[in-house]
Image (tube, rainbow, N blue to C red; front, side, top):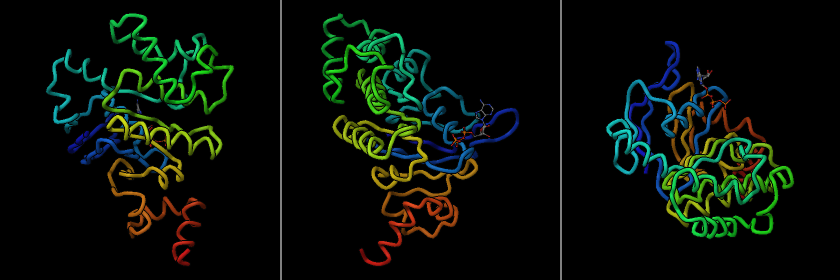
Length: 254
Ligand SMILES: Nc1ncnc2c1ncn2[C@@H]1O[C@H](COP(=O)(O)OP(=O)(O)OP(=O)(O)O)[C@@H](O)[C@H]1O
């Protein structure tokens, strides 16, 4: 679980995150949504320890980041997996080499142990047959699955995903969502996903944090989001045709 208390972060005198207090649950897909520029990426980077907040605390399973020694912070970072927007694979490495990268960087395991673990996660994301291919030789959806395999190869307790669906067709996007949710549940990971995708909100929105201009304006799940009369949320979600259709169907009792 990640607990955030009164988080403030700004740049050059401009406050971007204005006192966010929230919790992200273990074994659940936690989503951060909001208009472009509302501070989602800045928030995610604070959670990753890439930005230092001016005020407030972030606790990871009870440990406040700011109270940890540098060594403990390094250890905590090893427990974090990240799926970057656009996958961010190394073009000159094969699928297997990409997935092995965090093990080579962060562990002293023997080659055979690392290869076995790579095989295990490639099996999990259904990519064994592509292990010797290069990123340019596989589809965008497969590249995302490589990125997920790489993010989980070191058995993280926390998984952060920045727009994991961007650039995918709707069918592949749903497959990626489902894969992230399954892996989150199987391994009891605290997963935080930054997304614009309303389909993801519907499918895997177990705990949704809605940011508006750096303020947490609403929090709930994918059922509650249809029932809220919070104007900021309704303005945002009903600009999506998908949400309008689901709401209309609900009103008609379909
Ligand atoms: N390193 C930085 N230095 C200065 N300002 C920054 C920095 N990073 C982000 N910002 C500012 O913080 C604000 C929020 O940006 P952020 O990228 O978090 O928005 P977002 O909600 O993720 O938007 P989008 O959905 O378009 O990705 C923007 O005004 C942005 O210019």
